[in-house]
Length: 212
Image (cartoon, rainbow, N blue to C red; front, top):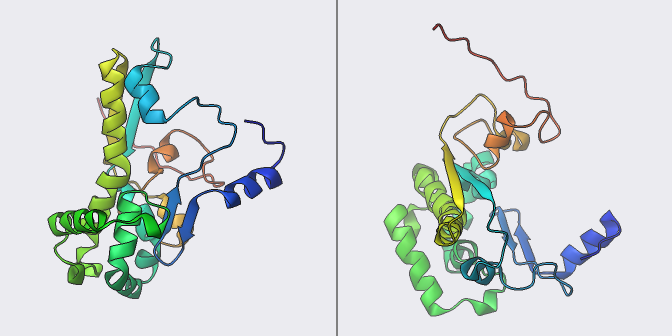
């Protein structure tokens, strides 16, 4: 893969299957390259052990990764009303990473409703009152499923894996960049404690002193 400049990269992305809808905070990544630097499907390569096995891996996530999907609703709770009428489309696309609406099957819609029923209730329950259930559903579907699946393949081939889950809610959060108060442990919040500055801002993190 050879990309010479930012303009070329942006053009490439615009030609691929990246779907974005700001009202529903929808971003679906299905980018493919004509000259891939990865010689096959990622999951197949992991399953077959076609990667450097002499490694140790740190894999982790944050407690409320799904916040990332509901920035618009956290900014303006009235935006929840757009989810219900379009759940048969938005639900499968986001939960199962389906970029093309024409590829959604009746089974996809059925499974999306099963997940919704488990985490939230019904379509009528997609609202401010049940936002925690919605955030949990997308945390599990969009982040934890992939992480656990990847770890399973790594362990299958004897790779040492260190997994973490950040549950500490600090003063700052990625959501603050969208004028949303800190409401949980959002996607990328762990980076605040690793890099500085991060997200283009230098967060003045407080240091607590503990007595021995």
